Structures are given as structure tokens and as C-alpha cells.
Image (cartoon, rainbow, N blue to C red; front, side):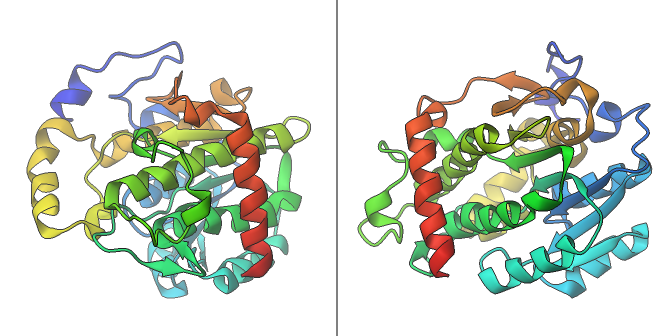
Length: 301
């Protein structure tokens, strides 16, 4: 437990920044629940899959390759599927595989990349925005037909969404040709994750729900793309100010399976409680425009 987590207080949900994924699922019987988790092979995704299996859920873990997915899920007696989020063909192949299976009670969009030191582009879109947002958009919208009548979609955003450019999403420069910053581009991608949830929540019918999560600041493999100096600082700060992986996994796990989160829709969650996002993160018009633009990207890739 870090010092930050030690001093964290529980909120209205009964949980807080010091809670772990095991704690927020204590006493739950998830037998009969089928949950998809992207980024299953390390960090938060791996821990979430472990805890869900511990509580009896059927879990499918998605990773960039079938080998990585199998290596992570095999020891748990669970299934793995290849889903490289930056490659639409891989995402669509995963969708086709999963659409042949049982209904999904939760889709957890956990995978992502962060703070690439240099600009990279896929299909005309800056890579962080494409991987974190467009890839998950393709996955989730492709699987909505398999989402259970009370199913939940949980998307990892971040407090870093507040570092997005002033206009929020640079629709006139999606490839970051005019300007690229590692953190501002990451912030834009995380804002897109949040806006996706805001719009999806209004499109879901019945008891199906969507929420966005800030997991906290955690020392995971997500930092692998940072420059060496930042990676070193990240590692040194860990014991004092960063959440542990079990703590970082708590909010997304709570959002996906806990009865206390069943009625939440379109909310931004921090430390297992509803939180306030930036003004841009609550902009419905911006969310609707992003959805429309992303549909256009999806249609051409």
C-alpha cells in the first residue's frame, strides 16, 4: 500500500482509493457471468481477470496476440482472444469470434498505450487516439448485439483527460500533423474514451449501462512507451505515491460487477465513486460529434 492509498478515505459506495479488486468483490458470486477484458496479459487487466475468476466468473481475456492471451488466461483455465486494437482487421476478427459465444455481461476496455515519445500514426489517426479510442469503439459497437440485457461497458479513461487540448478533440488534425505532444495527445485519447461513454450511455437500451473509470496512477507496463528519464522517475515514485495494481484494478472491477454500480450510466468514476470530470468531459455535443467522426473512421478502415 502506498502512502496515498493509506490516507485515502472511503466514499458513499463504501470503497475508496485504498480498496483492492478483491475487497470490492468480496462476497460476490459471479458464476454465470461472462466478462471480456482487453489488455489481459499484464497489469490491471491480468489482475482483474484473476479476481473475476476467483469469484466464479467466466472470463475471456484479449491481448495483442493469441500467444499473449493464451499465456495469461491458460493458467486460470480461461479463454484468450487476439485483439490488436490498432489493427481493425484484428479487432473485427475478435468480434467475429466473440459473437459466436455466450452473451457478455460486461465488456471492460482496459488496454491502452500512453505518452508515446514520438508521433505515430495509423490509418491517418494519431496512434494513441486510434488504439485507445477507435480500436475500442470498433470492439464495443461490434459486440453490442452480444451484450446481455443488463450488461455493462466499462472504459478506462483517466484524470489525464483534463490535459487534452483546449478544443478537446482536434478534429481538423486527427493525425497530429500540425502539433504533437506525448501528454496532450494521451489526454486527448483519454478524453475520447470518456466522451465515448457519455454518448454510448444515451444509446444503450433497457438496463444496459456504460461507465468511464480513472483507475488512479499506477506503476504498470503502460509506462513502457515513456522516454527513459520518465520511466525512471515513474519507478522511483511508485512506493510513495502510486497505487498498487490490486488498488488500481478496484474501480473498473467494481464498475463491471458490483451491485452498487448497476444503476450508474454515463458516469465518470474515481476510487469506486462517481466523480466530476472536466467541462469538456461532460460536453454532450462534443461526445455526439466524436461518435459521428469515429463512425466515419470505422467505415473506411
